[in-house]
Length: 425
Image 1: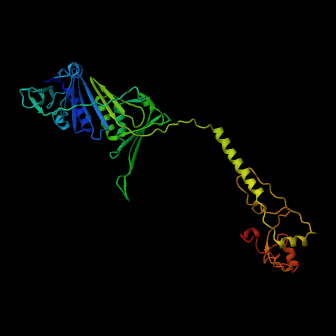
Image 2 (image 1 turned 90 degrees about the horizontal axis):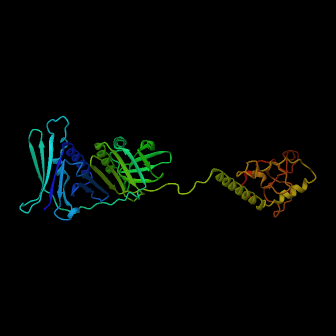
């Protein structure tokens, strides 16, 4: 048989209401664990991704507290489970009123009835009001084995702390339909809280529209901030907002401890004998710079080396590619005017360091050796030898001028440049 009796002040009873509201957002049932020196409410959500433990100190939180477990010795405990809504119907929101108006109570007395002469076990709560009215509630509980989530803060090197009221202002920007919260520290001295929801597609139908809201906070606004830059930790937005809202009711600071993604994250806060710890499952990734960035001068030298290698390769292609075979008509025409000397215009110097070829060099790069850069035209040859093997139908009159065509009947005036004809040879 267990002996459990404690008394609450109106203010303490109001705090129990607030913590039950917070736990109700995690689970429909709440577990109770009573030891000789403390009393705890715990909750585990259905997906087992969030665990909450709110511990009440027996000496500081209660007006009077007595707990003698039926077994277990000095370290024994009494555990049970009840519906959260059942407790919320007893611990209502207006239990504490500083002005003493209607609805306020004078004290709250709680007793556990577990005796052999009783047919039923009950969790009895008595609300003693200011007008002398006593409200008694007898709740049914279920004996369960309560388990706790373990968290080692020595491994959690990443941690930050901020007052809950300031954090609550930031959570108001998060969309109501967002599901995940990404917390990461940038390299510009800011921490970013980004809430988002992922788009879910079923064939051509989009079931959810993506929504992203990012709130950037300077690290100087934190009471403590020691997080690896580029570390992304992702948790549930719903859990985070419930935790921040409850921490704001206590007017205290919210502390976060975590190591790396896929490892648990714990939020901790408390005051006046109340300690709240929430352990959440996380996901995410680490995009921090694990390699030393390459200095700028080295990048420039690599770019220059690539340009030089490309230019060298371009020059080698030009030198290795032979010029096209000169037609027989051009050779005969050159012999016919071998006595005449013409002044060749100087060729432009090629910029071997450039990766591009000037349009002026388009015809010059394919010229045979010792060929003067004159206007290349395509015309008819009426005076050349009618040898079908050596004389094609069209010939390249590269050294045949317009004046000679006009003065003699050996050719017709050119009508087109050779560079405009593709695929003849």
